[in-house]
Length: 402
Image (cartoon, rainbow, N blue to C red; front, side, top):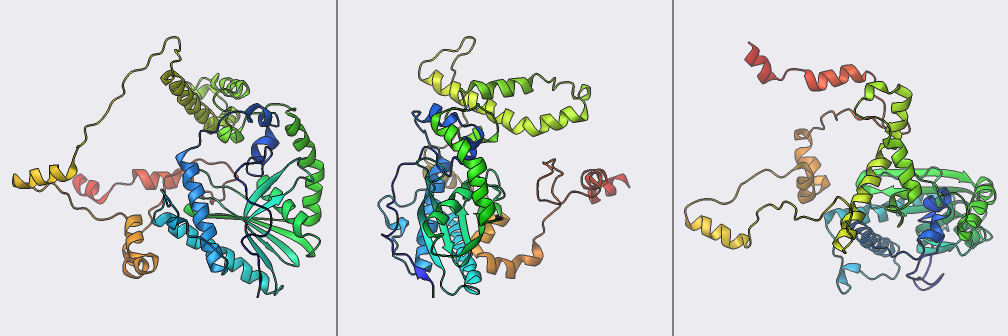
Protein backbone atom coordinates (compact mmCIF):
# COMPACT_ATOMS: atom_id res chain seq x y z
CA UNK A 1 0.00 0.00 0.00
CA UNK A 2 2.70 2.47 0.98
CA UNK A 3 6.42 2.25 0.57
CA UNK A 4 8.24 1.11 3.65
CA UNK A 5 11.76 2.32 4.23
CA UNK A 6 14.07 -0.44 5.60
CA UNK A 7 15.63 0.20 8.98
CA UNK A 8 19.21 0.35 7.72
CA UNK A 9 18.72 2.54 4.60
CA UNK A 10 19.06 6.29 4.33
CA UNK A 11 21.53 8.41 6.24
CA UNK A 12 23.49 6.73 9.03
CA UNK A 13 22.35 7.69 12.50
CA UNK A 14 24.99 9.41 14.61
CA UNK A 15 25.11 10.55 18.21
CA UNK A 16 26.65 13.99 17.62
CA UNK A 17 24.70 17.10 16.69
CA UNK A 18 25.33 19.73 14.03
CA UNK A 19 26.54 23.12 15.21
CA UNK A 20 23.61 24.64 13.33
CA UNK A 21 21.05 21.96 14.07
CA UNK A 22 17.35 22.21 13.37
CA UNK A 23 16.44 21.71 17.02
CA UNK A 24 18.55 24.70 18.13
CA UNK A 25 17.59 26.94 15.19
CA UNK A 26 15.22 29.10 17.24
CA UNK A 27 18.27 30.18 19.26
CA UNK A 28 20.88 30.63 16.56
CA UNK A 29 18.52 32.41 14.18
CA UNK A 30 17.74 34.98 16.89
CA UNK A 31 21.23 35.11 18.42
CA UNK A 32 23.80 34.08 15.76
CA UNK A 33 26.99 34.51 17.87
CA UNK A 34 25.72 32.06 20.48
CA UNK A 35 26.74 29.11 18.29
CA UNK A 36 30.49 29.71 18.54
CA UNK A 37 30.32 31.07 22.08
CA UNK A 38 28.80 27.81 23.36
CA UNK A 39 30.32 25.14 21.12
CA UNK A 40 33.03 24.18 23.64
CA UNK A 41 30.81 24.33 26.72
CA UNK A 42 29.72 21.02 28.22
CA UNK A 43 26.03 20.18 28.12
CA UNK A 44 25.01 19.17 31.63
CA UNK A 45 21.68 17.74 30.44
CA UNK A 46 18.61 17.38 32.63
CA UNK A 47 16.07 14.82 33.76
CA UNK A 48 13.59 16.39 31.34
CA UNK A 49 15.96 15.88 28.41
CA UNK A 50 16.53 12.27 29.43
CA UNK A 51 12.81 11.71 29.78
CA UNK A 52 12.20 13.24 26.35
CA UNK A 53 14.85 11.06 24.71
CA UNK A 54 13.29 7.94 26.18
CA UNK A 55 9.82 9.01 25.05
CA UNK A 56 11.11 9.48 21.50
CA UNK A 57 12.68 6.02 21.55
CA UNK A 58 9.35 4.51 22.57
CA UNK A 59 7.50 6.56 19.93
CA UNK A 60 9.88 5.34 17.26
CA UNK A 61 9.35 1.73 18.32
CA UNK A 62 5.54 2.08 18.36
CA UNK A 63 5.45 3.67 14.91
CA UNK A 64 7.85 1.15 13.36
CA UNK A 65 5.76 -1.71 14.71
CA UNK A 66 2.59 -0.12 13.33
CA UNK A 67 4.27 0.09 9.91
CA UNK A 68 5.56 -3.51 10.10
CA UNK A 69 9.16 -2.25 10.13
CA UNK A 70 12.02 -3.84 12.03
CA UNK A 71 12.07 -2.46 15.56
CA UNK A 72 13.62 -3.20 18.92
CA UNK A 73 11.57 -2.53 22.02
CA UNK A 74 13.54 0.00 24.10
CA UNK A 75 12.01 -1.49 27.25
CA UNK A 76 13.88 -4.73 26.52
CA UNK A 77 17.28 -3.08 26.03
CA UNK A 78 19.88 -3.18 28.83
CA UNK A 79 18.78 -0.61 31.34
CA UNK A 80 15.36 -0.23 29.72
CA UNK A 81 13.63 3.13 30.06
CA UNK A 82 14.22 4.69 33.47
CA UNK A 83 11.40 7.21 33.12
CA UNK A 84 8.82 4.88 31.60
CA UNK A 85 5.27 5.12 32.98
CA UNK A 86 1.67 4.97 31.78
CA UNK A 87 1.81 8.60 30.59
CA UNK A 88 4.74 7.80 28.30
CA UNK A 89 2.99 4.67 27.05
CA UNK A 90 -0.17 6.64 26.22
CA UNK A 91 1.82 9.39 24.52
CA UNK A 92 3.74 6.95 22.31
CA UNK A 93 0.62 4.99 21.38
CA UNK A 94 -1.23 8.20 20.53
CA UNK A 95 1.68 9.47 18.45
CA UNK A 96 1.82 6.32 16.33
CA UNK A 97 -1.93 6.43 15.79
CA UNK A 98 -1.74 10.09 14.79
CA UNK A 99 0.93 9.47 12.13
CA UNK A 100 -1.05 6.53 10.72
CA UNK A 101 -4.14 8.75 10.57
CA UNK A 102 -2.24 11.34 8.52
CA UNK A 103 -1.00 8.61 6.21
CA UNK A 104 -4.55 7.46 5.59
CA UNK A 105 -5.54 11.01 4.71
CA UNK A 106 -2.73 11.23 2.15
CA UNK A 107 -3.59 7.85 0.64
CA UNK A 108 -6.94 9.23 -0.48
CA UNK A 109 -5.13 11.22 -3.16
CA UNK A 110 -1.84 9.31 -3.43
CA UNK A 111 -2.01 5.53 -3.03
CA UNK A 112 1.74 5.11 -2.67
CA UNK A 113 3.17 7.58 -0.11
CA UNK A 114 6.62 7.15 1.40
CA UNK A 115 6.98 7.21 5.18
CA UNK A 116 10.24 7.58 7.07
CA UNK A 117 10.79 7.22 10.82
CA UNK A 118 13.57 9.05 12.68
CA UNK A 119 15.00 10.20 9.38
CA UNK A 120 18.20 12.22 9.23
CA UNK A 121 17.70 15.17 6.88
CA UNK A 122 20.42 17.32 5.33
CA UNK A 123 19.72 21.02 4.69
CA UNK A 124 23.36 22.07 4.17
CA UNK A 125 22.40 23.70 0.86
CA UNK A 126 21.27 26.68 2.98
CA UNK A 127 22.96 26.02 6.35
CA UNK A 128 26.61 24.95 6.27
CA UNK A 129 26.98 21.43 7.72
CA UNK A 130 23.33 21.59 8.73
CA UNK A 131 21.33 18.45 9.44
CA UNK A 132 18.73 17.16 11.86
CA UNK A 133 16.66 14.09 12.63
CA UNK A 134 12.91 14.30 12.02
CA UNK A 135 10.50 12.03 13.90
CA UNK A 136 8.28 11.26 10.91
CA UNK A 137 8.26 12.30 7.25
CA UNK A 138 5.48 11.40 4.82
CA UNK A 139 6.12 12.17 1.16
CA UNK A 140 3.53 11.99 -1.61
CA UNK A 141 2.71 13.74 -4.84
CA UNK A 142 1.36 17.15 -3.99
CA UNK A 143 2.02 17.09 -0.23
CA UNK A 144 4.98 16.67 2.09
CA UNK A 145 4.10 16.19 5.76
CA UNK A 146 6.49 16.63 8.67
CA UNK A 147 5.53 15.42 12.17
CA UNK A 148 7.57 16.23 15.27
CA UNK A 149 6.71 14.82 18.70
CA UNK A 150 7.28 17.04 21.74
CA UNK A 151 7.05 15.29 25.11
CA UNK A 152 7.58 18.35 27.29
CA UNK A 153 4.92 20.03 29.40
CA UNK A 154 6.63 23.34 30.11
CA UNK A 155 5.52 25.35 27.08
CA UNK A 156 3.11 24.58 24.25
CA UNK A 157 5.14 24.68 21.03
CA UNK A 158 3.52 26.22 17.96
CA UNK A 159 4.20 25.05 14.41
CA UNK A 160 3.52 28.48 12.88
CA UNK A 161 6.75 30.00 11.54
CA UNK A 162 8.69 27.29 13.39
CA UNK A 163 12.26 27.26 12.04
CA UNK A 164 12.95 23.70 13.20
CA UNK A 165 10.01 22.36 11.22
CA UNK A 166 10.94 24.40 8.16
CA UNK A 167 14.50 23.09 8.23
CA UNK A 168 13.17 19.53 8.34
CA UNK A 169 10.94 20.37 5.38
CA UNK A 170 13.90 21.75 3.42
CA UNK A 171 15.90 18.60 4.13
CA UNK A 172 13.03 16.40 2.97
CA UNK A 173 12.64 18.45 -0.22
CA UNK A 174 16.36 18.04 -0.91
CA UNK A 175 16.04 14.29 -0.55
CA UNK A 176 12.75 13.66 -2.33
CA UNK A 177 11.76 16.86 -4.11
CA UNK A 178 12.83 15.46 -7.47
CA UNK A 179 10.95 12.18 -7.00
CA UNK A 180 7.61 13.65 -5.95
CA UNK A 181 5.76 16.65 -7.30
CA UNK A 182 5.45 18.45 -3.97
CA UNK A 183 3.81 21.86 -3.91
CA UNK A 184 2.53 22.03 -0.30
CA UNK A 185 4.28 21.29 2.99
CA UNK A 186 2.28 20.60 6.17
CA UNK A 187 4.28 20.70 9.41
CA UNK A 188 2.71 19.35 12.60
CA UNK A 189 3.88 19.42 16.20
CA UNK A 190 2.32 16.67 18.29
CA UNK A 191 2.56 17.48 22.01
CA UNK A 192 0.33 14.94 23.77
CA UNK A 193 0.82 15.86 27.42
CA UNK A 194 -0.41 19.38 26.72
CA UNK A 195 -3.11 18.22 24.28
CA UNK A 196 -1.37 20.44 21.74
CA UNK A 197 -1.53 19.58 18.05
CA UNK A 198 -0.29 22.52 16.00
CA UNK A 199 -0.03 22.53 12.20
CA UNK A 200 1.40 25.09 9.81
CA UNK A 201 1.13 24.88 6.04
CA UNK A 202 3.40 26.60 3.54
CA UNK A 203 3.85 26.38 -0.21
CA UNK A 204 7.06 25.04 -1.66
CA UNK A 205 7.78 28.37 -3.32
CA UNK A 206 7.34 30.34 -0.09
CA UNK A 207 9.50 27.89 1.86
CA UNK A 208 12.34 28.18 -0.65
CA UNK A 209 12.06 31.97 -0.65
CA UNK A 210 12.31 31.99 3.16
CA UNK A 211 15.36 29.75 2.94
CA UNK A 212 17.15 32.06 0.54
CA UNK A 213 16.21 35.48 1.92
CA UNK A 214 16.04 34.86 5.68
CA UNK A 215 17.63 31.54 6.60
CA UNK A 216 20.82 31.60 4.51
CA UNK A 217 22.10 35.06 5.58
CA UNK A 218 21.53 34.37 9.29
CA UNK A 219 23.06 30.89 9.04
CA UNK A 220 26.20 32.33 7.47
CA UNK A 221 26.55 34.80 10.35
CA UNK A 222 25.98 32.07 12.92
CA UNK A 223 28.51 29.72 11.35
CA UNK A 224 31.17 32.46 11.46
CA UNK A 225 30.19 33.46 15.01
CA UNK A 226 29.22 36.93 13.87
CA UNK A 227 26.15 39.10 14.26
CA UNK A 228 24.59 40.67 17.33
CA UNK A 229 23.93 38.97 20.65
CA UNK A 230 20.24 39.08 21.42
CA UNK A 231 18.36 38.02 24.55
CA UNK A 232 14.91 36.46 24.50
CA UNK A 233 12.93 33.28 25.05
CA UNK A 234 15.53 31.35 23.03
CA UNK A 235 17.99 31.80 25.92
CA UNK A 236 16.14 29.11 27.86
CA UNK A 237 18.24 26.21 26.52
CA UNK A 238 21.45 28.13 25.80
CA UNK A 239 24.51 26.80 27.64
CA UNK A 240 25.62 30.39 28.22
CA UNK A 241 22.31 31.49 29.74
CA UNK A 242 23.64 31.95 33.29
CA UNK A 243 26.68 34.09 32.47
CA UNK A 244 25.66 35.86 29.24
CA UNK A 245 26.19 39.60 29.74
CA UNK A 246 23.67 40.53 27.05
CA UNK A 247 20.96 38.59 28.82
CA UNK A 248 21.95 40.17 32.12
CA UNK A 249 21.80 43.67 30.63
CA UNK A 250 18.34 43.05 29.18
CA UNK A 251 16.93 41.72 32.44
CA UNK A 252 18.63 44.29 34.66
CA UNK A 253 17.20 47.04 32.46
CA UNK A 254 13.75 45.59 33.04
CA UNK A 255 14.41 45.29 36.76
CA UNK A 256 14.94 49.05 36.95
CA UNK A 257 11.17 49.47 36.93
CA UNK A 258 9.85 50.08 40.45
CA UNK A 259 7.70 46.99 40.95
CA UNK A 260 6.78 48.17 44.46
CA UNK A 261 4.80 51.06 43.00
CA UNK A 262 2.99 49.64 39.97
CA UNK A 263 0.47 52.48 40.06
CA UNK A 264 3.23 54.84 38.91
CA UNK A 265 3.66 52.87 35.70
CA UNK A 266 1.52 53.52 32.65
CA UNK A 267 -0.60 50.73 31.15
CA UNK A 268 1.77 50.71 28.18
CA UNK A 269 4.77 50.15 30.46
CA UNK A 270 2.98 47.36 32.32
CA UNK A 271 2.23 45.68 28.97
CA UNK A 272 5.94 45.68 28.18
CA UNK A 273 6.81 44.31 31.61
CA UNK A 274 4.22 41.51 31.36
CA UNK A 275 5.84 40.36 28.14
CA UNK A 276 9.25 40.16 29.83
CA UNK A 277 8.43 38.67 33.23
CA UNK A 278 8.92 35.05 32.18
CA UNK A 279 12.38 35.86 30.81
CA UNK A 280 13.24 37.83 33.94
CA UNK A 281 12.24 35.08 36.39
CA UNK A 282 13.91 32.41 34.27
CA UNK A 283 17.13 34.42 34.19
CA UNK A 284 17.04 34.95 37.96
CA UNK A 285 16.60 31.19 38.50
CA UNK A 286 19.51 30.43 36.15
CA UNK A 287 21.79 32.87 37.99
CA UNK A 288 20.88 31.33 41.35
CA UNK A 289 21.48 27.79 40.04
CA UNK A 290 24.83 28.76 38.53
CA UNK A 291 25.98 30.52 41.69
CA UNK A 292 25.05 27.54 43.89
CA UNK A 293 26.91 25.14 41.62
CA UNK A 294 29.96 27.41 41.60
CA UNK A 295 29.85 27.80 45.40
CA UNK A 296 29.72 24.04 45.84
CA UNK A 297 32.86 23.86 43.71
CA UNK A 298 34.69 26.33 45.94
CA UNK A 299 33.86 29.75 44.50
CA UNK A 300 33.15 32.42 47.13
CA UNK A 301 30.76 35.28 46.34
CA UNK A 302 31.25 38.43 48.39
CA UNK A 303 28.47 38.73 50.96
CA UNK A 304 27.19 35.16 50.48
CA UNK A 305 27.90 31.82 52.14
CA UNK A 306 26.83 28.18 51.87
CA UNK A 307 24.64 26.82 54.66
CA UNK A 308 22.67 23.64 55.18
CA UNK A 309 19.08 24.10 54.04
CA UNK A 310 15.94 23.05 55.86
CA UNK A 311 15.10 19.35 55.70
CA UNK A 312 11.91 17.55 56.69
CA UNK A 313 11.88 14.40 58.81
CA UNK A 314 11.39 11.09 57.01
CA UNK A 315 11.18 7.39 57.84
CA UNK A 316 14.25 5.25 57.37
CA UNK A 317 12.17 2.05 56.93
CA UNK A 318 8.47 2.47 56.08
CA UNK A 319 7.70 -1.26 56.42
CA UNK A 320 9.22 -1.39 59.92
CA UNK A 321 7.34 1.79 60.90
CA UNK A 322 4.01 0.32 59.75
CA UNK A 323 4.59 -2.97 61.59
CA UNK A 324 5.57 -1.17 64.77
CA UNK A 325 2.52 1.10 64.74
CA UNK A 326 0.15 -1.81 63.96
CA UNK A 327 1.59 -3.82 66.88
CA UNK A 328 0.74 -0.87 69.14
CA UNK A 329 -2.92 -1.12 68.14
CA UNK A 330 -3.06 1.82 65.72
CA UNK A 331 -3.70 2.03 61.97
CA UNK A 332 -0.74 3.77 60.25
CA UNK A 333 -2.48 4.07 56.88
CA UNK A 334 -4.91 6.64 55.54
CA UNK A 335 -7.44 5.83 52.83
CA UNK A 336 -8.35 8.38 50.19
CA UNK A 337 -10.03 8.38 46.81
CA UNK A 338 -7.74 8.39 43.81
CA UNK A 339 -7.53 11.70 41.94
CA UNK A 340 -9.24 12.06 38.56
CA UNK A 341 -6.03 11.58 36.54
CA UNK A 342 -4.86 8.58 38.58
CA UNK A 343 -8.33 7.03 38.40
CA UNK A 344 -8.43 7.43 34.61
CA UNK A 345 -5.03 5.77 34.30
CA UNK A 346 -6.16 2.83 36.44
CA UNK A 347 -9.47 2.27 34.62
CA UNK A 348 -8.41 3.34 31.14
CA UNK A 349 -10.04 6.21 29.27
CA UNK A 350 -12.89 4.14 27.82
CA UNK A 351 -13.98 2.49 31.08
CA UNK A 352 -13.44 5.73 32.98
CA UNK A 353 -15.80 7.53 30.63
CA UNK A 354 -18.39 4.76 30.83
CA UNK A 355 -18.41 4.53 34.61
CA UNK A 356 -17.73 8.05 35.78
CA UNK A 357 -18.57 10.47 32.99
CA UNK A 358 -21.65 11.81 34.82
CA UNK A 359 -19.73 12.06 38.11
CA UNK A 360 -16.87 14.23 36.88
CA UNK A 361 -17.00 17.94 36.15
CA UNK A 362 -14.48 20.54 35.04
CA UNK A 363 -14.98 23.70 37.12
CA UNK A 364 -14.32 27.11 35.67
CA UNK A 365 -10.62 27.90 35.71
CA UNK A 366 -9.09 30.80 37.57
CA UNK A 367 -8.71 33.90 35.37
CA UNK A 368 -5.20 34.12 33.90
CA UNK A 369 -3.57 36.93 31.95
CA UNK A 370 -1.87 35.58 28.83
CA UNK A 371 -0.49 37.06 25.58
CA UNK A 372 -3.06 37.97 22.94
CA UNK A 373 -1.61 35.24 20.70
CA UNK A 374 -2.89 32.54 23.10
CA UNK A 375 -5.51 30.38 21.36
CA UNK A 376 -7.92 30.23 24.30
CA UNK A 377 -11.06 32.37 23.90
CA UNK A 378 -11.10 35.65 25.77
CA UNK A 379 -13.46 35.97 28.73
CA UNK A 380 -16.39 38.07 27.56
CA UNK A 381 -16.75 39.95 30.84
CA UNK A 382 -13.70 39.15 32.94
CA UNK A 383 -14.71 41.39 35.85
CA UNK A 384 -18.16 39.87 36.27
CA UNK A 385 -16.91 36.32 35.69
CA UNK A 386 -14.18 36.77 38.31
CA UNK A 387 -16.64 38.18 40.83
CA UNK A 388 -19.10 35.35 40.30
CA UNK A 389 -16.36 32.75 40.60
CA UNK A 390 -14.60 34.07 43.68
CA UNK A 391 -17.02 36.27 45.59
CA UNK A 392 -20.37 34.47 45.32
CA UNK A 393 -21.37 33.13 48.78
CA UNK A 394 -21.28 29.39 49.20
CA UNK A 395 -24.41 27.55 50.40
CA UNK A 396 -22.76 27.17 53.82
CA UNK A 397 -22.09 30.93 54.03
CA UNK A 398 -25.69 31.66 53.00
CA UNK A 399 -27.01 29.34 55.68
CA UNK A 400 -24.82 31.02 58.31
CA UNK A 401 -26.05 34.46 57.30
CA UNK A 402 -29.60 33.33 57.92
